[in-house]
Length: 189
Image: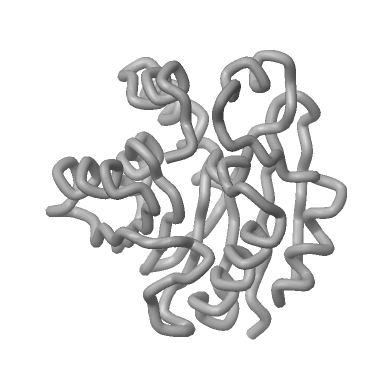
């Protein structure tokens, strides 16, 4: 996993899980995710825990083997946990009502791989399905936290075009400089 030791410690802490829950619940209230949701890159599972309380069926896809095993141990009785890359998803086309990812895109090493994740999200969504999520934006504190990590911050200005190129419409991007970017997009029906 492209995270340094301090970053891993913070993201696996109870305090971080509480912060995620506090921030994610209002965000989820604004998004209808439907009945069969895929979460890409859940890491230690703070977002997964919150999603399990609000979506009927959840599948998670995690690239890191150790994190995948942790997720299976924590949530395997409530979520379908898969190891694999968001850039090459092991799921049928048109399966999911929504695909979500939270604070993970900046850990994808190149824009080309990020774009592959966007294209795969479009492929596995049903017509009318939603791709949405959040990611962090560059700040001094964020840069310090990522020393020795993969850090490829999403450019909020180019994100709408990149999502449209992946096959999405109704693209919405809201950037909060030095904080985060929220995005949503719909697979054409």
